[in-house]
Length: 402
Image 1: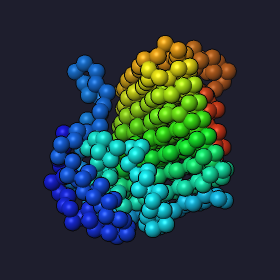
Image 2: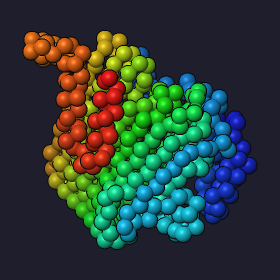
Image 3: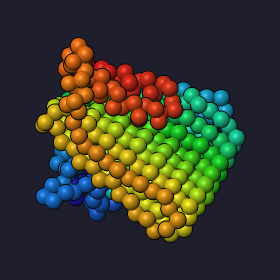
């Protein structure tokens, strides 16, 4: 456990953040409880193999670049007809009851040290409220970090029979130098027969340490789908999760990453089947070059009451360098025999026969490798239903290859 940040924080700082956003007393108390809990909380869990922890979060010197009162960002919010996309301060003022009902109901504010830290300190926030029956596809959130640290929070609530597609982009201001820390928590609620699709394209500076948790609850016949592209940062620790709470609920988690130089990418995808006739599909593909490292953990948890479950998972990592490292740990936890489920993971290099064939057709090795990498990502691109996100991700991958 690390207490490096806790020693530098005060109740006065947390109170100042809360008051600047016009928050009610109950929310300030939630922040202060999270602050008090830091001393007893552990860092987020990481994959361990014999003799090795793949991600060492305790080694980060948070106190050197986290200042809770120095927050600067450029935040653009684009709403759609019938949908409210509000800053945190406006949402607290206009939808206090909605926030009180859902804040912390999906992601436990004290689930681990870094989540509690974000609960105590977040000063950048967005609420997306989709009333009953509204269908919207073009909600956009653009976040550009312009300070050494930024703590962000997003709440999405889709009422019965509502549908929304959200595209979030994360980047770093051009004038920002040195190390940064970005923390993002997303809570998504899909009520009966509602559909939430949340796509994130992360291209933060490669001097950034990035911690994100995205978690959704799907009620009866509801859907929570996640798309996550990770290109930037020095270190990323990201968890994307869905609880299928209602009969007939569904979730799809699609991920893509491309690491190079000394980037470290730690990704977890998790789904809990807790009701009947639920379906989940987890698809992740990643590429590593130079001395980049990745670790992936995927968990499909089928509960005792989850009759007629369908759950699938596949993760593939392509390594372009002998100095890169990767590990993958797909897991099935099945407590109901009426289940159809599968999981797989592969780690490998570019096929030498494919390269030889392309070389024999007059394509040089670098161009051939780039074509194979782009082709490797096609199965993930095909799963991305948001055209704009898919095209942006393709462009970032092509730029990385160049």
